Amino acid sequence: MRKTLSTSLLLLLTSMLILSSLSPAKALRHAAITVDGNPNDWTGTPGDTNTWVHDGTAGEWIWTDEVGDDTGNGSYTYPYANVTGTEKLAFSPGDFDLKGLRVAWSESRVFFLLTFVNLTDNNWGTDYGEENVWVSAPTVAETTAVAICIDTDRVPGSGMAMVDSLEAGGGSMRTEILLPSSCLWEYTIEIALLDVVLWYYDGAFIAEAYRNFPCAANVNVTKTIEFAVPISTDPSSGLPDPEGETWALFAFIGSQDNEHFREIASAEVAATNSWAAGGGEGTGDADSVGPDPDAFDCAFFANKSAQENALKGFGPGPTDYVEISAYKETPEFPLSFGFILIAIAVLAVSFKLRKKLYL
Image (cartoon, rainbow, N blue to C red; front, side, top):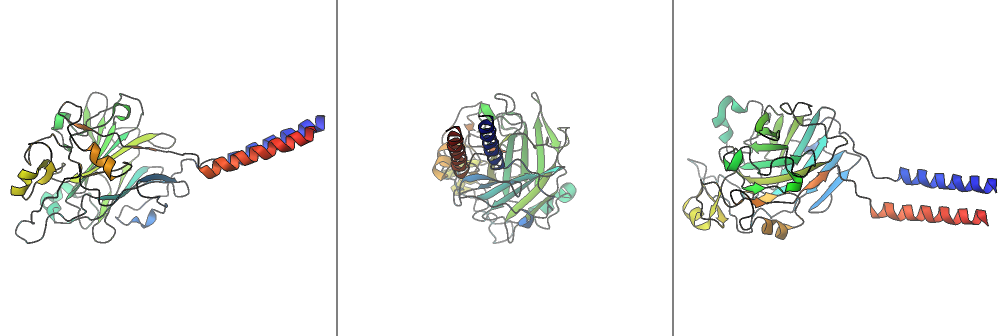
């Protein structure tokens, strides 16, 4: 009897060891990435369209976005102006169409890679002189604006709802978008003219936390924007260490206009103003704040239809901001179907062998 029990226990322990070896991958720091606009040192394997996958071997979290969904509520139109003094279009089709977002981190930095259908260089960045000396790219993606919001504490009601750097549309981004109360942001990363700014909300005030980012773009071949944010325990110096933590991420893409999101005007206004983005439902002109959300594209929606529905109408909020609840968490390690089948099989075999030993 004692031998039978010992054998049974051995089988159970063996089953537990097999199951533990099959458990999902843990968070893994990425090797240092060179921020040069070249995505070659991002080695993770993406999933299907509109999926969020974790490649445990590469240490990357990868969102693959649907192409051709850069239409906001379904009716948004690009500005059709030419670059001043030329016959070149200032905005190219696909400038606001996100193809993918990747996130990874090393011991000292959090890395981001965004891929677009197109990126346009109009030499507008040269107008800012020494202001953008930290940009390492020889060319600048001038027409595209990005806002990445991060809920780092995952405490409902803790953080800022408005996707702006200051209150009520008076800030730098001016997206007319709200986040749900379950995922309010502590940090927002804003990109315009490859000027990457980290904003931090401490519960009472929004502050420009950090600005001197390594950042680069490849507008000719890979259509990518790549940048890194330092990891720091001081919120004025960088992001907290994400290792072992769960973050909620949001990402919004729009048209850059003087380092904020270009306002969405009505179709009637856009017809007479070549610099206006059109298709909005409100009556605001190209320079007013609100009420249409100013994102042409967003990450993390299940499909184009869901995204269009979220960007329609005037949602809840102090200035009729539209609430966007599409987000993903990192790290996110769902049990795979294969893992579940193997686990069931191992436990079943263990149970049958143990039963025979007792007989």
